[in-house]
Amino acid sequence: MRSAFRPLTRRGLLTGTLGSAALLAAGGTLAGCGTKGAQQTEAGCVSEDLSGTEKKLAFSNWPQYMDVDEDNNAKRPSLDGFVSKTGIQVTYTEDVNDNNEFFGKVQNQLAACQSTGRDVMVLTDWMAARMIRLGWLQKLDKAKLPNVEANLLPSLRNRPFDVDNHLAVPWQSGLAGLAYNGRVTSEIRTVDELLTRPDLKGKVTALTEMRDTMGLLLMSNGHNPSDFTANQFDDALNKLKKAVSSGQIRRFTGNDYAPDLAKGDIAACIGWSGDIVQLGFDDEQIKFVVPESGATLWSDNMLVPNRATHKANAEELINYYYDPAVAAQLAAYVNYICPVQGAQAEMEKIDPELAANPLIFPDEAMLSKARVFMALDEKQEREYETKFQQVIGA
Image (tube, rainbow, N blue to C red; front, side, top):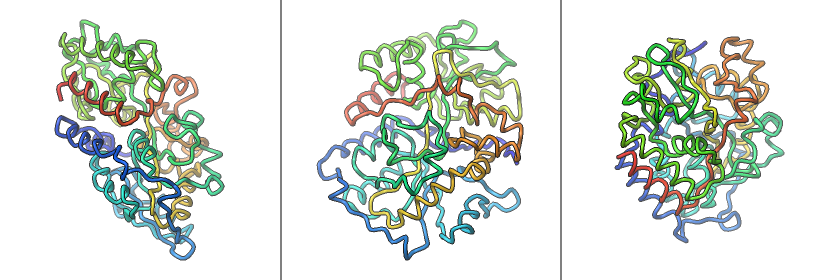
């Protein structure tokens, strides 16, 4: 059953509150990231697995990122199915409201090689990359993840921050690209159109998420966001700066662009595929476009932190959600890109219209134009975020 558009989406929670205060908070956490005491190694921080005797699991996720029974919000059909199938009791908590905020909750324990009380947590690529850099995650046993090995989309394998696919398994994915309201403007195909077309002046928004906005601008200049230089970043930033100075861009947003786009208060924007799927249910004139130069592909990832005591149980959960039938059940509710091959055929049985939606099940042509943003080291992360925030006026 397709859900109605939910104004407070998971992606909005990620970036809707980002501003100068959030940047300072991010800088504060980053400042401690490189300290010697925060780094851990596999040999130096050993975790004990009690899965053999304890059939339980603690799972931290974002709000509205799990299928819910429409008649009883206390029921989560796919998760309830896992409990019934395995006998593993799951404590499911929606306590990831912002990547940096969540980092603040767990950093002291993980830096000290102590338990966070969580066995699985779902975090976005760049935060997963930071935790990998710090040595705060347990390596997953691929032998216990046959569904992941068989069904993970090729475009999500060997990502820059986890080239061996040992530490982070996508929960859901999405694209950042262009969106427009066909009731108030004509079709747009390129980032340059968005940033320069006279009829769009003052009717455009872009995202406060640096990796998505800058990833698109890098590609519009012919550069690869998965592998770029500081000079290439600065060139793309200068293009953004011109669009801000000229008044082409009205403002920068989290997913609060969605109501404005629906009403026609803005004509076009940089936006997220999951939001546009939801808007499109109510108005087919709201369109998402993969720019001719390409889109950014992001994921939220299932991670097992150090000192989690139910790693094998966590691996069983991760593997379960890579069963195509289960993945389709989840995707029918959340409407982001399903990272599981084979789920599209299963979605045909649930909702043929959703199965045909390229923003949930992109074809190879679309995915071939999508790029994951480069893994940044601590210095790069601080430098690029600071430059970007200065341009967007956060």
